[in-house]
Length: 287
Ligand SMILES: [Zn+2]
Image 1 (cartoon, rainbow, N blue to C red):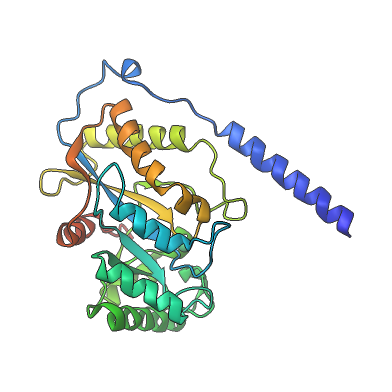
Image 2: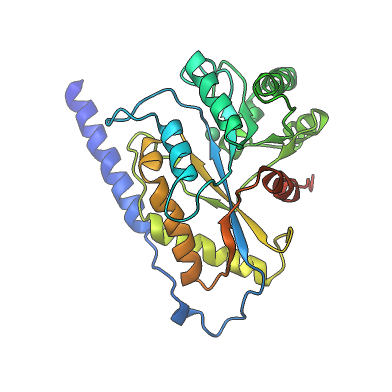
């Protein structure tokens, strides 16, 4: 039994290693794309965090949600960055606890927005796996949970695991919720167990190059003179929390590498502007 489990762990690690190597991609540099059209409108990064708050601590005794809040407030790239946290309000290891609620209050007090990810005590359940009545009730519960903390009714939802369909979308709309997807995912939500993220820099570099193409093809909205670029992380991931400041640098450095102009303020730092940008990023149904 123990032997089999050890063996399967080794296979799993090998699989992840191979997957990491296979997905390895090279860094695009200015020399690679100097003949491509210039991008005229600067981008501004809009940070979003899913799945929190977390009440765990890492091996250094740090709470990952709290540590991320500290870093986006104070770092060498840009201080006082404001983000949106798509939260789980009733998790027994997070938002459902007193410590979790205190973290949600702190996020709000520091000027970050709270959006809804899940409000089911069942946790991170795909909305597409819920009955219509369970989803509807969980959204109403979540809106109320967030309102108790912030005083406002959130109008933003991000579906767990990005699973949505015509029916869930209709129930979001009925509850006055805009569905927010992402432009770039740090891919830090899929390998929680190992808390590692392969090829972070080249992945973000390649994603930013795709953004560059989308801007040239006029596929992304311009809001107040910038192109908001949504970036998604997971604050309960202790690896992410341990590297948040580095991620901020990677985003601005790799934008430069793919000749993507960045606004004077590379990140959103005003709550109202953040909300406005999110409204422009809301998913519009093609159903
Ligand atoms: Zn999630």
